[in-house]
Length: 93
Image 1 (cartoon, rainbow, N blue to C red):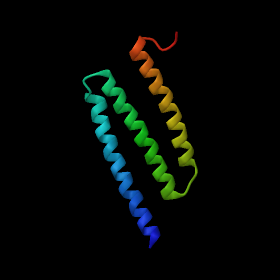
Image 2: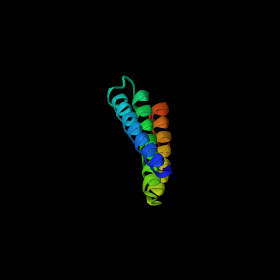
Image 3: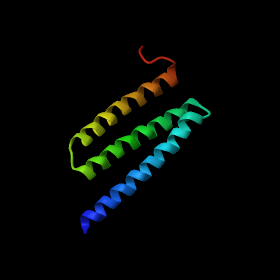
Image 4: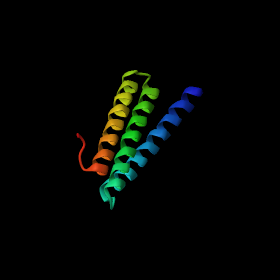
């Protein structure tokens, strides 16, 4: 009984994350400013990371958790680089 509840909850959360990614993609493509586009991109990578975590919970494989960790690290670095570019106009000083 509890396995059915877990799989149902994982499936519902995966659906909701895909919907959130679609909404963030709309914001990323139609954002009026560059800051809106960067926030949309941040939301997409966070949702992708969480989607991989839910895949890992559903399948029980560790590789999904490791991939989510890599996406989280690369997403953070890219956010910092984009913020620095918007503030100063250059990334490397």
